[in-house]
Amino acid sequence: MGGGHRPAAVATTDHGGTMLEVSNLEVVYNDVILVLRGISLEVPDGQIVALLGANGAGKTTTMRAITGLLDVHEGDITKGNIIFDGVDITEKDPADIVKLGISQVMEGRRIFAELTVDENLRAGAYTNTDREKVERAYEWVMELFPPLADRRKSTAGYLSGGEQQMLAIGRALMQDPKLLILDEPSLGLAPKLVQQIRDIIVQINESGTSVLLIEQNANMALSIAHHGYIMETGKMVMDGDPEKLLKDEDVKEFYLGLHAGGERKSFRDVKHYKRRKRWLS
Amino acid sequence: MTPDILILAQEAGEQSKLAATIWDGLSLGAIYALLAMGFVIIFKATQVLNFAHGALAALGAFFVASFATIIDVPGRWMPDAPAWLTWSLAVLLALIAAAVVGMVLERLFLRPMVGEELFAVAIVTLGIDIVVRNITNDWIGTDIRPLGDPWGTNFFDLGLLRIAHTEIAQFVVSIVLVVGIALFFRSRTGIAMRATAFDQEAARAQGINVGKIFAISWAIGAVLAAVGGIFASTFPRRIGVDQATAFFAFKAFPAIILGGLDSIVGAVIGGFVIGLAEAAAGTYLEQFEFLGSGFGGVVPYIVMLIVLLVRPYGLFGTEEIRRV
Image (spheres, rainbow over the protein chains, first blue to last red):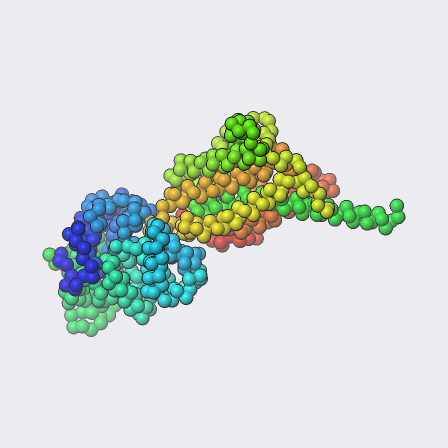
């Protein structure tokens, strides 16, 4: 697993330049269902890493394992470990993980719909007790998302889908994270909004935050990532830099809806799609 | 007397009866509102239907009786201090004790039930109610334990009304607490509590310590229950805390259900509606002999039944109550 070819925005190196290192992670739900079968991934300092995969591949479980939220879903880490910024965070409390500097944008936005925009952001700043830092983060969020600035006092549940996604990302930024994990931020958004969210992720990364981007929208994710991983049924089947992944015939076929000739395939052909044990070794 | 004067006298009597009933209803309603608010805070933050709320109210009132009169702490160490000061300090100690009891109950019996069915958790609180109520009653014994409050049975007349000093204190305290709770909900911890109430997992993802929020909400709930218990055990309601106090406090349930389980505003309005209904029934239904005496006490439950039939989620409650 090499680093990206694009220059990283920030590279502090007191931990070998690796912000997050997941090794041989195995996760079991309800003591019987093996969801992650020993996956490894690495997010280098200041980079955007994309994690792609179909439904049920284990992308969200990977995020839950990293952020300590497996317990509510009856999940357990049975093997492997997760090192963040030089600290072992395997099975740590979610609050401690947030304090160490990992923020997440959960799938489906999960904003606090009954609270106002401002209150959502303040809830996001819960672990950030430095008033000045909170103020700065708040100003920055307002700069990144002008639509939120106009609606500070409105109830979050009444925002449009795009605005809610902005709020979810803004809320995560209030903790002033070193690593931001986004779970399908493009889900259910119009193409124009996906572009906007994409540009904002780049902007966040350029300000020095490492990003782990979990996506089904391979085009969007690979267009900004420094490195990409592809997951299937709980295993990493492929990884590499985005140019290489985009050129790969299998990725083209299964994730971009293109086959060798470059033309679109029909749904009938997709039905013949069979998962492989390992795409390449 | 000429008939004119008779009619006037009768009208004056009717008016003062009405005024007294309304005042009585409002003052009763304030107690129910205090009790209901504590219940709603616990339900909102933790999704727990706390059937032990009445027992906590009686226990809180008994703590006050203990500190203020029975063991006389801190009064026994400060013989020269004015009565209101030693009593206030005793109440403060009692409220701290109530908060600790609330947090201990949550930690021991409800934290392990997180994620279990709403119904199962409610039954646990029913068990807590039985245990707390019986222990409290055992401590109280068969006596009526006066709280030793400085207002005593003092009152003054205002026009048609006879107003007890405790009632003034009760309204001041209720207003302060309602405003205080409203401000608390805008604070960092308050926002975290509302966030937790709305989506526990998303709250944890923000680094909010949900266990701490649960403990705080139980502490606040128990303190509000104790304050309600204090006013339920002083003049003009009663002359002290006794074995019936828990049952008196239980009448806050119709108020809670009327207002909707998860609405603070609903709890306050529900409290006043039930208080007024009970007072009005007490005054005006007495003339119907077939109803017997004390029918006023039944009216809150009748109102509750009717509300449940028409609006199962209460007047101000969220239509769908989420299950965890």
